Length: 253
Image (cartoon, rainbow, N blue to C red; front, side, top):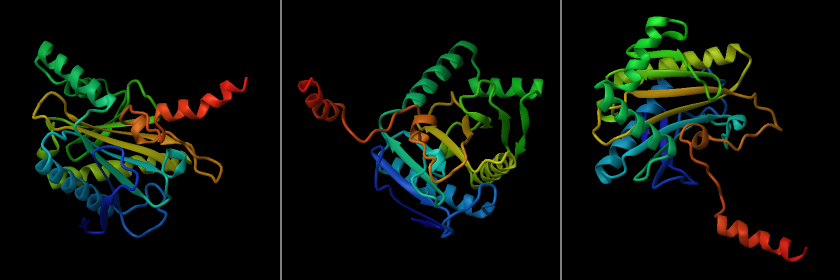
């Protein structure tokens, strides 16, 4: 699939029922914060179009994610900047947790969990950073990564509710965050945006970004967006295979 400068194609190593990669352009290496705004917008819209096609094809594949591991120190397999897109009928651990907690909160308080959290952060101002269009940006109250920043889109709970402008302002906020990370002398980062397309109005959309160690030839992380943003461990061998290969070492002792 082609949208502007972006090309989207199947992931060589799929992590779910539907798994794809979206390239920004033909630049092999792009320092964080230096990409053009339009290249991010094109790539995001390409992801959006792909996910909407999946929903049309398989309405049960409602657990969706867009992630980015920029550079090998952030778990990226390539220097070339790209996004990972996936959709499945089974939720990731974080999607399962967010779905349950947001539903419980709305039933108890008749309000959205993230909307109330955002209102508190805006009121206190200690961690609130700024806005890009309707997206509201803040430092995470209880960060799970270094310099973790959240963007919340209040009142929008579904991929299908997002307009082109929402994606434009998301790209703007992402690039602002990257420029901040670059000012810290860092060159690797992670990005994650999760969707639960079940028609619920319980959970506002939220994007999470964290900075990672600097990339060097000997620095490589095996923790990708699947572990950090989805709460799922990605492994390349089944536990039964691990046991089969290890048994000989116990027989020898």
